[in-house]
Image 1 (tube, one colour):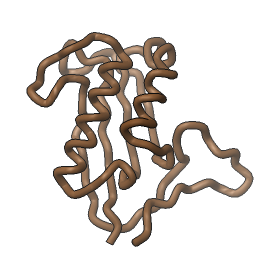
Image 2 (cartoon, helix red, strand yellow):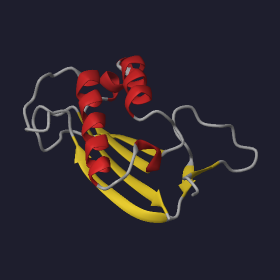
Image 3 (spheres, rainbow, N blue to C red):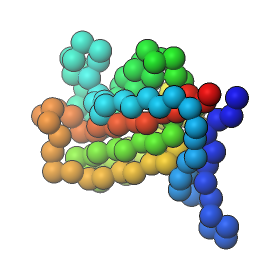
Length: 133
């Protein structure tokens, strides 16, 4: 059983916290954007890092419902309402990421947006995972 393969072009330095690309084969799982509310859709915090932690927990729950695990994540797209808040919460976000997801060989993109559909949301994360054949 092979896992996702991080892609690093020859001569490029290894990026910190993500992969430039990922090659994978298997059953694909697409997780819709997850925000920082609990499974019942209740907001418990307006703190950026805490919302990120909850969004990651929500992602893992959706993955598990498909028989997938965090190690199967090939791609993540982060939508944040404040680049400054995202960067300021970096240490806490990294800690949550290590605890919940556990590794960084994931192709990631982060985009600052004006707003998200859910008014209290500060971050929304979508995921593509590939369960190996």
